[in-house]
Structures are given as C-alpha cells and as structure tokens.
Image: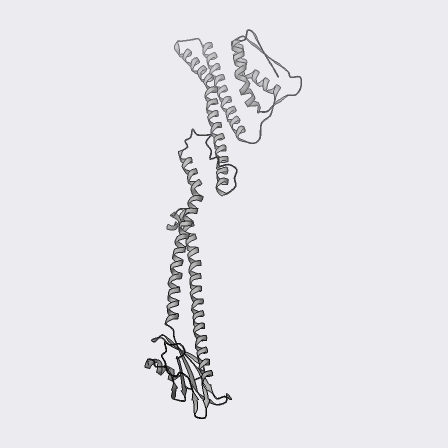
Length: 373
C-alpha cells in the first residue's frame, strides 16, 4: 500500500524536507534565544535588587539613638526609594506602595536572604538581614523591591520579534529553495519533454548535454548511451527484416512459379518429379536462409565474432548452386587457395553472402564459373 506522501513529486518532497529541517532549526534557535534572554533578564533583576539592598545597608548610620536612613520616603517606581528597613516587626523606613506589596515586604522581616515574586503586582522582592557594625547582632531586615513590568515587556517583544523573524526567514528559505529546485530540475523537465516528443523514427536524437560533470549530465550521458544501444538494436531488426524479405523473395517466387506451371495443365510424371524437386530445393534454400539470417543476427548482437575457412565456404557455395548450374548448363569450379585463408564471419553467413553473386553468375555465364579466394 502506497502512502499518500509517495504520490507527491520529488521536487515537492525535497522542498518540504528542506522547509521542515529549517523550521526545526529556526524554532530551536528561537526557543534557545528566548530562554537565554529570560535567564539573563532575571539575573540582571536579581543583581539590581542585591545592589539596592547593599547600597541601603551602606547608607544606614548607626547612632546611640538608633539607625538613621537618608531619604526614607518615596515610591517603588522611583529609583533609590524602593527599599524597606524593618527593625523587628517595626517598619523603620519604606516607600509608599500598594498594601499588597507592603504586606509581602513586611512578611520578609526576620527572614534569611531570599527572593519573592508578586505576580499580581509584577514586583520582585529581595531581603537580607541587617547587622550591627560588628556583624554579631541582627538589628532588622532590609527589603528591596523592583517593578518587573519592563523586563516582562522586553521578553514579550523579544518573543514576538524572534517569532516574526523565524516566519520571515522560513518564507525566504521556501522561495529560495523552490527557485533552486526549479533550476536544478529544469534540465530534467527538458529531457522529459524532449523524450516524449521523439518518435520511433528519431533514432539519432540525443540529449547532448556535453561531458558529464554533475548528476543531471551523468544521467543524460547514461541515457544517450542507452539510446545508442537501442538504436543499434532497432537498426539490426530493420536490417534483419529487409534481409529476410530480400533473401526469401527468390525461392518463394520459384516455388510459386513451379506450382502454377504444374497446375496449369496435365503433365507427365517426370515433369512433376522435377517440379517437386525444384520446390524441395527452394524450400531447403529458404530454411538455410532463415537459419543463416538468424545466426547472423545473433552473432551481430554478441561480442564474439565467427570465423570460417575460405575453402570450406567456397565448397558449400558450389554445393548450393549445383542445381541452378545444371539447369543452365554451366560448369562451376573452385580453385583451392594458395594458403590457409579464413573469413571473419561464420561459414553459414559467408555462404549466404556469396551465394547470390554465384547464382547470378550461373544464370548469365557462357559456360563456366570459377570460384577462388
């Protein structure tokens, strides 16, 4: 059972694979970027809160009447006035803020150093103990608060911007990938159109894309070689059909002529015997011709080539034309070659090539035909 995806073209599948791969990479980078940005912003906010606490601790002056703090009032939105100082449960100093933030800051009085987020107010708090000059006795707690809305807004803008950039890059990659794939497959489409336009008569048409230097030109070179072999095979078949038609025309005509003459009127038994002998000889000649042509076609299509003795070939030709020579009162002689000669084809093929020439000589010679090699 074939999957629906298998019906999609190669070009579309490659483009889809590229888009999926790039999309996964871009999404992974976008997620990593936003995570790193969030960690960096959180770390920056934590460092800022610690700095505020340390600055407030350094600004407190311890006297006999108790600690004093410059600029004890303010708003949490004002830099430098976002710090509370708690002496036990007593709020020694602090900004004027929302009661929920005030309550959360007061809850940190007496606690160890820690961070607390107030999501409803978008505020982060940090507290540290306040000790005396000797660092032995705990006097109270310093709490710093920071409005996190700007950090959250930065995260949101970064997320939206990186997402939009990812989408734009994916669209650009899609268009670029489609353009590159179209350019890469354009020669293949051209080859397909040319091959569809060629007919069986266009045996010499080739793609002709030059020397192979990439996958497409190597494919064209391979297909050109295949077309060469197919064209050669088709030419052999056409030549074989023409040879069969030419070689069988004479014996078939002789058989038909003998049959028509024998059926035209009553003749004596000797005439019928001679006619049947001629028909049998023509039939044998047809059988030999067919066998020879088949052998020649098989030999032409194979890598191995035949070889035959020239004297033996001439002797076989003499035997095959014996009846025709007797009918025309012609003497056929074979002159032995001075040395052992061979021809570069099989004996049957050589006989089939020479026999028509000798038959014509027997028909038109005055009295003698001499065969020599």
